[in-house]
Length: 203
Image 1 (cartoon, rainbow, N blue to C red):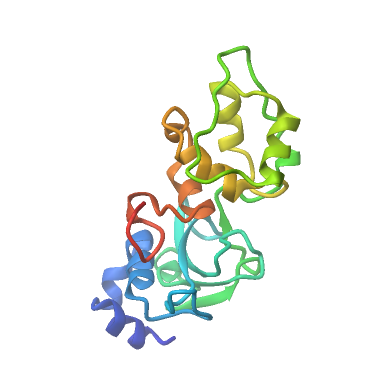
Image 2 (cartoon, helix red, strand yellow):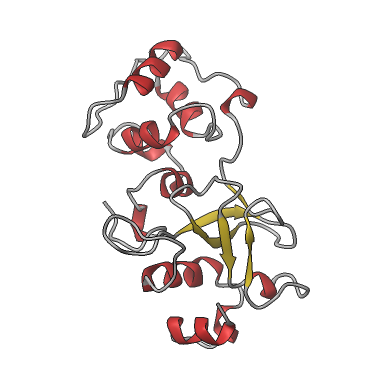
């Protein structure tokens, strides 16, 4: 994709992109104009990821062409990197691991310590769909979790547990929904909180 093509899709000159990493990334995803493959509804597979990358102080957002924001091999498209790093091209495209572009929550749960109850009242999930055997087995291993334990799980790195399924279930449980950081809910689930990560509406 050229900068000129991106300007046409977004309806904004590139000067408007500077520093607006999340808004510009989301606009590109919502345009449904780009994607490496198509989903079951025929729309391009892409979503906004949020995390960090060298050359950008603080948080940063970009587009990832994958259902999985945490795939190191996924192709990323960064339209605003140049406004933070003067050596970057107007349209940065590469594999997530190359620069790298590292989403919040990247890594293995085994490096973070085991979530556990801290003596409070156990809280049960209330998912809209029955949990898989994998998810139920994982929760059985952890044992009942109180609010503190669920908070630890919500913040745990994504690899090594059924994070997509259980983060979704946490977001569907009234007591636990506030514990899930919006960026993790936006990247680990298909719920699209506040409509800020996917092309469709928030669920």
